[in-house]
Structures are given as structure tokens and as C-alpha cells.
Image (cartoon, rainbow, N blue to C red):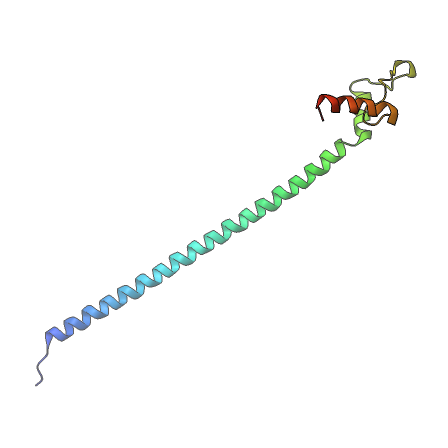
Length: 120
């Protein structure tokens, strides 16, 4: 009859148990990493959705701002809300020529005087 070696079976059982524990822990780690990756993917998709929604809102607001800044809109608001009217000819006063845009004879002396003082 063959003698049964108890030490050899104990070492096999120990190694087999360690292998099963290592395999299980590596599988659980893989699942945890996979779940974390999926959560990041969902968060990234939500962030892209929010970004596209904000860009659409910005586009709409730009269009609205452009519509409110048209001369016709400003004229309408001035006439209806502030009861403004076009000024009559007698209410318009001439302030004189613009020194930079005036005639050559009027603009040059003003520029020459500024150059003499050192303003230019």
C-alpha cells in the first residue's frame, strides 16, 4: 500500500486556493474598472449635451441681441416708450465743422497749433 503524503496535498490545496482568490480578485478589479469607465462615459455624454445646449442658448441670445440693436427697433422703442419725435429743423443747431474732418483750410491750422504745443 502506498503511503499518503499529507504535506503535499496541503501545499496543493493552499496554492489552488490562492489561485482562485487571485482570479476572483482580478475579475472583480476588471469589473470595477469597467463600471468606472462606463460612468465616466455617461458623465462625458451629459457634459457634451450641456455644452451643446449652452451653445444653442448663446446663439439664440446673439440673434435676439442683434434684433434688438437694429435701428428700426431702437426707433420703435424711442417713439412708443419714451414718446420721442423727430426734431424739427428749428431745433437742430450746427456745432461747426469737425476739426479733423473739416475743410483743409480750417483743419490744418488747428492741427498745426496742436503740433506747436506738443500734443501730437
